[in-house]
Image 1 (tube, rainbow, N blue to C red):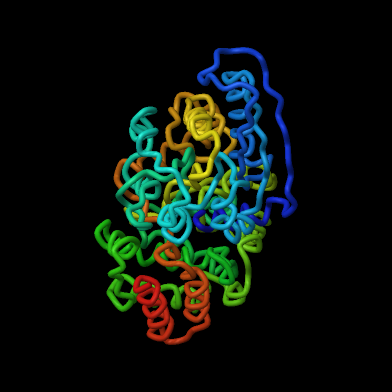
Image 2: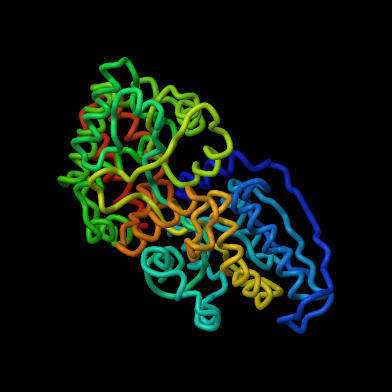
Length: 429
């Protein structure tokens, strides 16, 4: 969730608990000998989201192939699970399977506490490691709570990555082509500034602005740098990459590429600025894709990758995890496998998400097909660099504050120093 995606979804999901019991359909062949059983499933995606639609279909498919088993679904909020998961999963009321956020501070912590089932045998049984590879697999595996290696404790069926959304009509009006180099990118922004237009929609009070910072940092980084920062705990916030990123972000605010008053805005404000045509570009994740396809009616839009970068913010999506106290772990594994089947993966794609194992030929929506193909290129090149707030628990809030200080024009040494202190403290615990 991305971190950012999870937070946006959490706002969209109703805070109240919704309990839906779906009746079994007596057709198909059972892959389990169980009868009169209930599979308790929790997740926090809204019903009309790509994941909500695809997983509802997966529930129907599961019940068809498991006569006598009923799926009892409860919709939770992101905040509910963040606050209560350790307590609930350590009790007899734990679900059989649930969606949970990836990363050391979330899934890694639960795995370290012994609250999650080791899925390594299931991965070998179903061949999930053939579909979930490279950077995607890193967020599924944890050794003593640290992601990147060790046993499999979670399985994503979708992924996410960052990109530049742009208003094609505004680009055409000012005679601009899609930039393919960083110089062309800044030249396009200069054109808009001269016309009195703020080129980039942003929001400093939540994740969006820190993703601008991270993209700039990544332009001076490589995969080894990412591993040192995200996994090894050896980041130097005064190195060339962080110093360049911070100074360039501050310069962009001074030049008017990013509005000064956006320092206090939230992610939904950023989305509104782009949807309304106020700003011709917005840098964020694939979780906005389906929303824009539904909501933008007044102009044509598309996406391109941040010019010049081989690394982008992104990762596997949130994880399917099976609590140690699951009463029906085998059925839970069967459900996970259904979400990775071609028809469910294609449904995820056609609804605007990024499936981990879809075939482009199965995707009927041209824009969705392009979204998936771009992701597959990034995945093949090991180009997913996770998210900047991931390394330690609580680092998100420090990063928001530091990014706001940079945007407010404070000398970058101070914000970078606060990041270093919080980071070092997090890894020392």
